[in-house]
Length: 291
Image 1 (cartoon, rainbow, N blue to C red):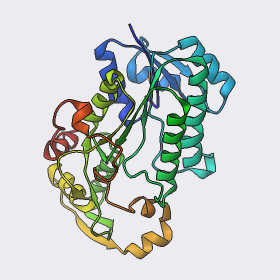
Image 2: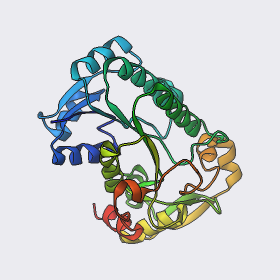
Image 3: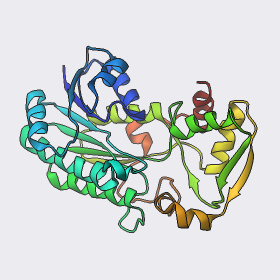
Image 4: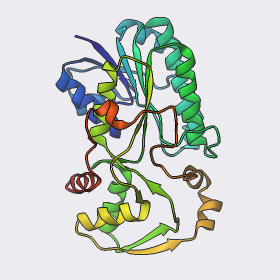
């Protein structure tokens, strides 16, 4: 039975990866910040190792040496910083990943499947994308066998945007919304994303994959489609783009170009790792809205 180590397992995507990995019979090991949370989610059959900070190399090395995994899925990431708690893009995306790769190089011969993001580019203005790219570079230069996964917007019931929308709809039919034009996503279902991570284990060569669904949609249309599917109605009140530029700088910078597949010449398509066509956008929304 192959040993599979997963970081970021209790997050949105991680829960689906672990569930599918259990179904496939892997010997699963999780590095987490809260073992009790992981046990509550997955049960005691999964082995958990608690560590507060992946930059604690001595502790991390002991864990990796003890597990000696054949495969590592690295899902650690954030979409928003909490600077008061020292939770920054640089620390979580870059420093955590760099330390993990350095330790793996010394204590494991395992392959790494790494969560990056669609839109990474040398010219990207956001620190979110810059730090994601920095982590990719650390993995590539480490010499560890790898697959890098770059998803577009991920759809599922636990998607934070949808969770917040449901909460807002219970209180008010009015939604303040950024007045952003000509910016598109190509949403991908979280179930497909999880499948791609596990299929990547069997991918024989190093590679980078872009994960997109079948349809390009604007943020407003996606939000509207979700609200309609849950049976709600809402009045959109536009927030001027200038306001976002001044007061939500990092989030605004993330939207520097369309979050769709095909920008990168070095990346392969979702079909090549998924082995089929992705779940259609309309089905993604319908499924996510059911819960």
